[in-house]
Image (cartoon, rainbow, N blue to C red; front, side):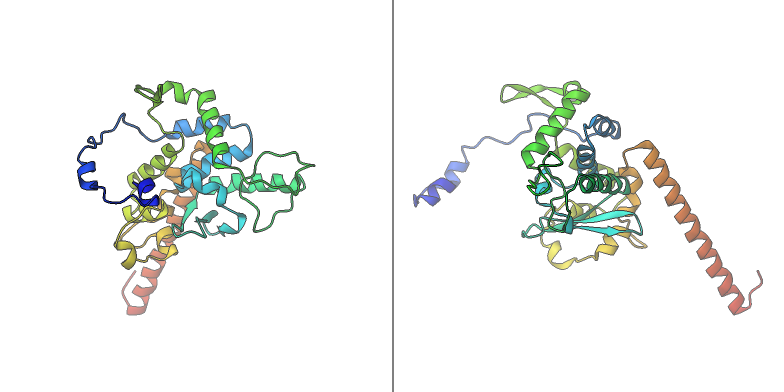
Amino acid sequence: KTFLEINDIIGINWPKVKRYLGEFYKVSEDRPYTHTEIKQLVDRAHNIRDKAIILLLSSSGMRRGAIPSIKLKHLKKIDKYNIFSIDVYKQAKEFYYTFCTPECRTVIEQYLDWRKQMGEELNPESPLFREQFNPIASRTNIIPMSEMAIKHTLIRLRTETGIAQAQMSKTKKNGSFRSEIMTAHGFRKFFDTTCTSGGMDVLFVELLMGHNIGLKKSYYKPQKKEVLEGNDRIRGYISVINDLTIGEENRLKQQLETQTQESARYKDIVKQIEDIRKEIGLPP
């Protein structure tokens, strides 16, 4: 249709044409990655850059195609929770923001520290991920990692861990069997499923994934702090950080920190109640 319109061929009865299109049906069912499978990919990653990419995809829900355009200036530290806020598609109309877990932030910072140790001078315009490089010869010739390179990295790791072969479906596409876990989109499904199951507000999940929420977007404008922390009625991103954490050690550490924060909050509430009782003269 676009080809004909560009070449000024008009007068086509498109409603009639559409009647000849077959009904859409899914060739096969697919599912998200599991925690165990993502951990296998992280453990198998050949370098810290690839570890960071996997953790970023799984904890932020962003598309693979968004990664090459992310620069260091698009990352903002939120030290209260030891996470990053990330601006996605910053210069495009599809712009939105999302977050990543403390686990992911730690690995990203380790990767950036390594680049600095290799002599690269990082600045706000530096790409978050760059192509593999010769530390001496490529200090200035900085090439952002391409979407195709990310795809090939994920395919290689899926093959090496056996995830792709173990999850082959019985249906074919382009002459080859399909895996029931989509190479990159499986991470978005993991993010969506994990956040929703963890009780995070569904609309917040949609916003952090950059989905179009229709007319609602024109009227509902939650502040970033509310999407992150939630409020008395709905839960935000911090409520699912532990669920999105991949490493068992990191998950237990995050769980302990969450329990410590909740304990401190409980003690603060008890103290406030005691202060109020004293002010109005009630016995303890």
